[in-house]
Image 1 (cartoon, rainbow, N blue to C red):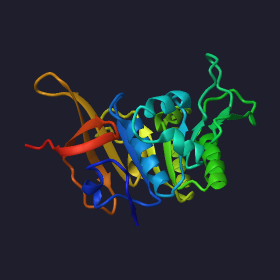
Image 2 (image 1 turned 45 degrees about the vertical axis):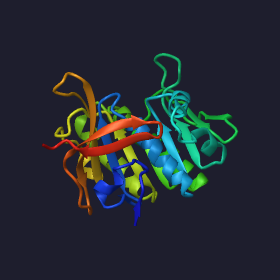
Image 3 (image 1 turned 135 degrees about the vertical axis):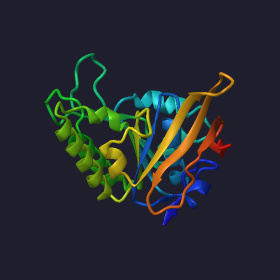
Length: 251
């Protein structure tokens, strides 16, 4: 079964939408539209009866909600209806501290804080997964966005252990039954990593200077298992409803 992403012009490039219950890597440089893409994906599901959750590891959920509320996406309304959740499991605000603190924005906008672990360590793939698993079961979450995979990728000083940990993290996400977008700050689509191989699809958002010296944005589907898809770069623009994929840039 395929589900709509809500990104205008994108679903037509992937046979109508993403395959339900699979994991997709969404990579790109800062400012390329990853957060907007993720929230649009969640909002579309919420509008169609699928509760969604945005898991923030590297960014404040207050900032994300404030920024996304500038679009006509009804973010705050969906939060109040318990259709859209934002979970902050990043480090505390105090510089240098990484207590295991979870902050959940609920429908009443109250922040529920949990300090179950006394260890002062950065969020690891394991601790992130356990938080996500609890939220998915409690609120019957069907769509997930994890922002970002890069924030938990470098918690191990041993490259081999890091690769194994990320691979295990993605495999365990599959068991939750959610359709998941994993955001990543990878800057090169050909810089192959374990998350690219483990994910069912890889979508890359480009931020570049065009031939006229103007900043331009584009979207490219690098991989999409079980799907016939365009491999071209497609122009992207921001509208009052979020991202919009446009015509191919191929000459």
